[in-house]
Image (cartoon, rainbow, N blue to C red; front, side, top):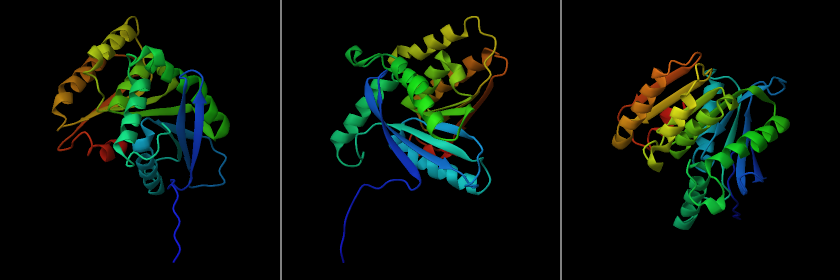
Amino acid sequence: MTESRTHALLPGADLHLLKSTIADDEFEVSVTVLRIEVESRKRLPVVYVLDANLQFAMAAQTAWLMIFARELPEMIIVGIGHPVGSLLADPSVAQKYSEARRRHMEPIPVDPRQGQGAPDFLGFIRDELIPFVESTYPADAADRTLFGRSLGGLFSLYVLFHYPEMFIRYIAGSPSLGGHGGVIHHHEREFATGRTSLPVKLFMSVASLEHHRVAVVEEMVETLKSRNYAGFDLTYDKFDGETHVSVVGHLLS
């Protein structure tokens, strides 16, 4: 018997390393086109998944199973991650990944010498990543979704409150709303000033065993409902008996 080893990749997925001028960093972008009709020329909706190092493979496989069962339409999944290697390799890799995601998704810069954080990351997605995806893949420019969970859920809301037209659907699972001095609530109030319409769909959720998150997430849900935006479709779910980690499969489906 002979043996060789290499890094495992998700079958059918492309891996791109994109150097961002705006965010001054390199991102690992994974893309899979999930079609049943292989020869189709139809443009497909795109789901952009934050924290791709943790969630791209699960998102892609979940979507594919549901597409195969005719429970979802065909789509493209784009995972936005960081080129840090396997998170299971050693604690130092996990630490490097944690620092990278905080640098780009927190609404207050972790270190101003490394850029503006969320504003720069938003700019990368809007002005560099989306044009790349839509020029390279059969993407429907009018049908984009942003999926974020935890710190990614906070960033999803940050994008919604600053550039809502970028996506038509937002998913904010277990968003980290209580930290950062509650600055996301300030962004929400500023966003609401003088606004009467918000033609997007937003799905927010929390796990019942995330005891410290439930109240703040439900407070944000009620605040957004009270705005009475025209065209705004808000869905909220609390997943009973789940934790911050175990809830991921429910949230994705």
